[in-house]
Amino acid sequence: MSIAVETVEIPLFPLGTVLFPEGVLPLKLFEARYLDMAARCMRSNTPFGVCLIRKGAEVGAAAEPHEVGSIARIAAWDMDKPGLLYITARGGERFRIVAKTTRPDRLLTAHITLLAEPPVQAVPQVLEDVLPLLRAIVTDAGDEAFPPPHRFDDATWVGYRLAEILPIPQLARQRLLELDDPISRLEIIQAYLRQHKLLEGD
Image (cartoon, rainbow, N blue to C red; front, top):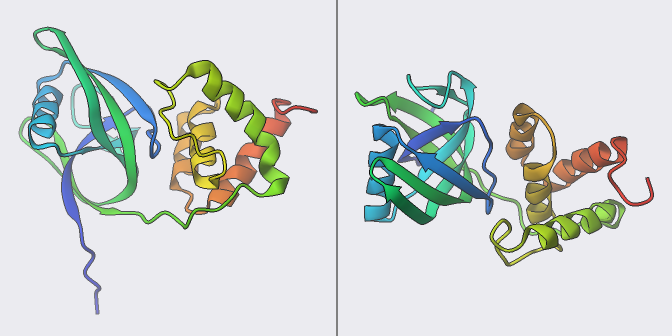
């Protein structure tokens, strides 16, 4: 017996980057399909989905996206000349694609199911050595790059923020997004930072 999974349909924006929950993503839109998508989202106050490209490119034919991505909501926009729209998107919940469709205008849409986040967990003491680095980066970059609240006591938030700024391949970033356990994510990040001597005392 199959179990029905509740899904919602959203437009997709496959990109060469990974968006994490609560992350900030500036985008420059010029293709008609994405200008129309953004206009609809702003008009109806609805989100779109951002997924890392598995195969293909950001422009031209519809790309093949990875199955796990993040909801994106338009937080700000600016159009200084016709046909060129600058938006700032904020990351929302993670999701998994259940089915997708390519529209005649090459815009991808997908039925998705949202992925639940675990209850808030503190950063374990053995992993706290990652915090000074993140605090310094957040302070240096400012609230525009890292909008408050800054939850340095939340292992999920800390892991997502470090994952989005590490100098790692996008596919590695995608794997960190897909992890459901925030402690495992932080352990992987800590191991990377220690290996590259990026933590105090290393």
